[in-house]
Image 1 (cartoon, rainbow, N blue to C red):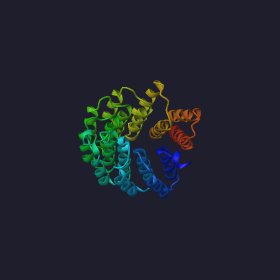
Image 2 (image 1 turned 120 degrees about the vertical axis):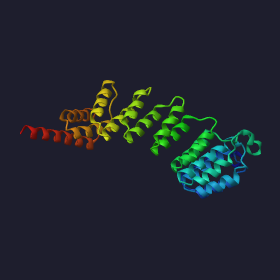
Image 3 (image 1 turned 120 degrees about the horizontal axis):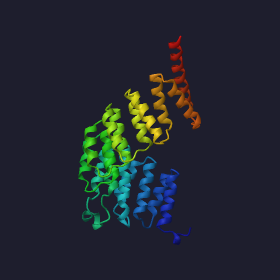
Image 4 (image 1 turned 135 degrees about the horizontal axis):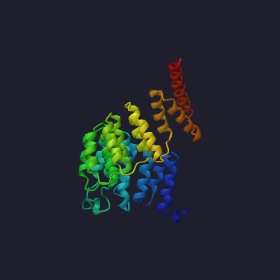
Length: 304
């Protein structure tokens, strides 16, 4: 392409192409040669460097060129990308230092640019960094500083508490969230079930506005794990009555129940389901056969 016809878009395309092929050196060379850059140029380079494992270089580039790019409205995207990159590698302190460089309000924007300020992704990325590092206290401090929150903010924070088995704080925060989504209801069900509190797990299950397959599986698996075999079977029957189709996870849990209570009829029913639905699940089929065999063997033993 003649040099006279090159524009920022064509330069950015070349840089992205080099990075996608792992040629970091050429990407850097082209970036340095650009007659003018925009925030998309910087974002593409930072993201590409991170994907190629060049996290430190990405940080240097952002500091060096962050104030020189034309069109600063997307500069925060480059910052957010690097914050997430630091978080994925456990470098939380560096992520926080970068996060603190992004103004909270537009009036504080660098060079008076009101478009450079924290957005939802900035806040959520920092919360996620702390949650991944197990620092739930710092995550909550960031969460509490947010003037507005989106569903990802709530989900990340509450899931962090569930992961640490702090169901009391998870429940308190869940109660404050406006219109919790189905994913979060399922998270609470699974959290209580894993702690052995089937009563509260069942309470959340019954109260949730709309159940999906994950909801049923979480509850059935929780019953099986906590040896409430009757509850698991009842839920499985209710699930079928409500025309919710089971999947491999459902069948694995119910099969485990059938082997524990030596229920020949239930084991055969699951075996037929696996065969009828043509699941490519040799392990489950084998498990179903074992379940039937054990139950049959016990039955024969009792008769003889």
